[in-house]
Amino acid sequence: RLFDAIAAVAQPRLGEFNPQNLANTAWAFATRAVDAPRFFDAIAAEAQPRLGDFNAQNLANAAWAFATAAVDAP
Image (cartoon, rainbow, N blue to C red; front, side):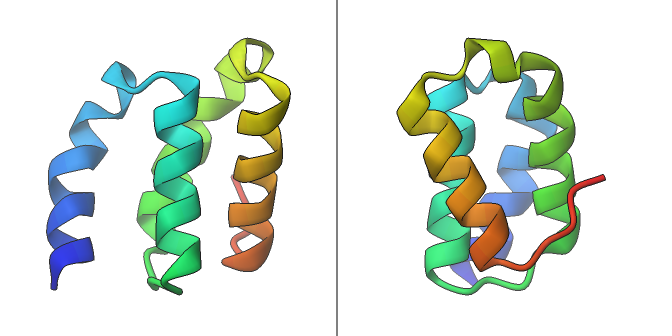
């Protein structure tokens, strides 16, 4: 599956993602209802220490994605 392949390639590179990249990636996976809890965990782990760098739209998109995916962030 395409989303599985994207997660496999993206996960080790999440440190290269800016806040918009992290939020948009989570949003895309949630929108398609992709079951990828480990990938969401990895996004959350990368995003949490950098939340101060997220603008309002990034925060809203990330919150929506995690709520829609029903993923409990670590």
